[in-house]
Length: 291
Image (spheres, rainbow, N blue to C red):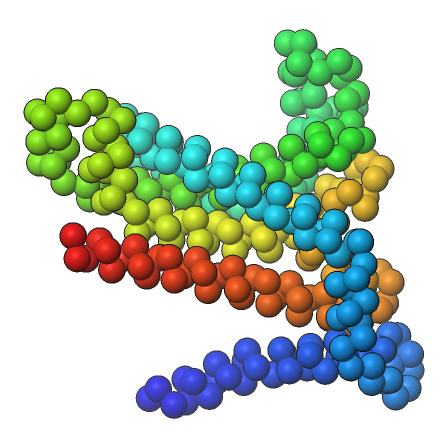
């Protein structure tokens, strides 16, 4: 039963990757795609060009900074909200969890128009409210005129979309923490922070590591939120992550070979990152099972 499954997985995963690898080593554009011309084999030249270009390192730096900030905010806020969720009454908790599931289930392609309307320069409700309370200097404030405020909006939207899964997962983990251990720690004179540090955190560490790992992978792959919002203002190049850059080279510049090489480098980076994260998850689970 295992062999057919492995065969299907190998075909589904390996065939696209092998095709991507072949294209990444060719000069492959529209002439080759629809013109039927023979692609020129260039070997690793495009990989060398990418690694030598300033655009790659700028896009990689931008991607890493975004992932670090987004994952930090998601996990930090998620942990705080999971704690609060455990302290509210059951009907309120049920309502909040249903609301979060609704947010989690909403596709980005539907959520983005709502957010664009909220921050619209002429009719945006968020702009109107923030201007009235004195946060914004003008009601027609363009969040995407400057990269910093543009990335603040994108990060807020990504964190908003990821919080439901994180909160519900951590809330489930918190309900499994032994009340006897918590009570014993308090009887020994431990404060709230020490109870969390030495009792709660070790108990939820495996779930926390899984949440962090998945958040890193998801935020690294964020595409729709950036792509659908970056055209609001100027400085579109300031929103190039590795994924956006690969898409622009492939489908805007019609340089499919170069775009494929960027995508493969991105896959390799994400593979290394995922391997390290999964190793930490397994190590954390082993430590938890031994304790």
